[in-house]
Amino acid sequence: LTTIMAVEFDDGVVIGADSRTTTGAYIANRVTDKLTPIHDRIFCCRSGSAADTQAVADAVSYQLGFHSIELDEPPLVQTAANLFKQMCYRYREELMAGIIVAGWDKRRGGQVYTVPMGGMLVRQPVSVGGSGSSYIYGFIDSNYRSGMSKEECLRFTAEALALAMERDGSSGGVARLAAITEAGLERTVILGNQLPTFFSA
Amino acid sequence: MAAVSLVRCERGFARDAAPDWMRQELRTGTTIMAVEFDGGVVIGADSRTTTGAYIANRVTDKLTPIHERIFCCRSGSAADTQAISDAVTYQLGFHSIELDEPPLVQTAANLFREMCYRYREELMAGIIVAGWDKRRGGQVYTVPVGGMLTRQPVSVGGSGSSYIYGYVDSNYRAHMSKEECLQFTAQALSLAMERDGSSGGVVRLAVISEHGVERRVVAGNQLPSFSAI
Image (cartoon, rainbow over all chains, first blue to last red; front, side, top):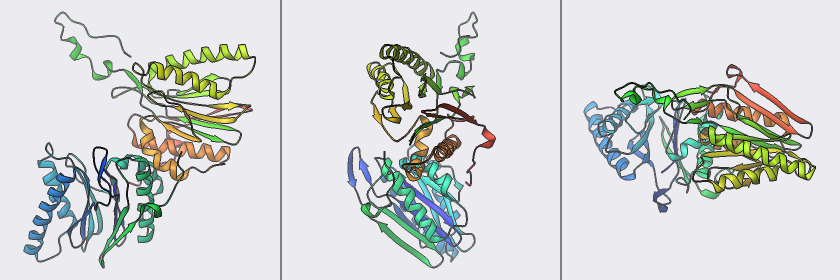
């Protein structure tokens, strides 16, 4: 069921996710990419039902692309987030989708918006989601500081994901990270054996 | 049931008039924790007991003495854990008298496990047993719901524990000093209390070692705070 995360920093955002998709106890895909591009500098992190989140993300990508062409400008992250919110709220009874929208735009720089199940929308400097997120709230609360650099954010995200993947049976595989800034997009993958290790009792 | 009085009236739809919290069982929602160090153990717990959404007791003591240097941290149903602790306290006291020696922590832990496993269908109890004895020094044993028993250098339990697994995994180091363990435990409990609605109040700590038991309380406003977000 996943662990996803996004962190704002001065020039952009860092997003991350695990790579495990399960059908019951079987790992259907151990190298899933849960970081989905919605536009050039806007991504979404998907958690919950794979089918639902893929469908919603496709619909929003279309709507946002259309809107951006009409506007003749790159779209705002807030716009993308609101499109997700509208769809997730309207169809809240039918959907099981927890989504984090993150990206960079010229007006407000790096932004992270979370649209959890139920369809609320709120902007947060750091957001975590998915079943594995419960285990890392304490770590996030104690280790997050505002004003971190891109490298610090990447390390922070990688460590948090590693901790969650260690504890949550529905999260695992590799850690996928991406940094989105004005300059563009930088994707990295951290393989299982390269993830930071911690104490395990 | 925690609260017995019902608003009774002739017509019999009185039950619905009673608020939700009068119909709920008393639970220690909880975050509990225990850490071994060289020379003893540090144990800690929050202080909130809830009946539904009402906080029945905001200064609960979830750190219960079982013997002079053996404590248990209780989570789950307040009634169940109190009953089990009382029973184990009796059994352990009897055993200690027969033995003419202070009992082993492992013995206490096994008594808990026996009871929690045998009555697993009826009970809702997650217990951490921690203490000091001469044979093995400081030890922490965890007996979660279901009745397994395992020894761990550090153990967390209760509803709030989910939120601090990441913090504990990343911050625990072997061979910490007593003071470091106290800090570590207080921090972890504060983080959990911040996130878990069923945990809160004050942080109760205790250090159990060869020298005895040292209890402390950290009040709400003295807890480290973290909400950057």
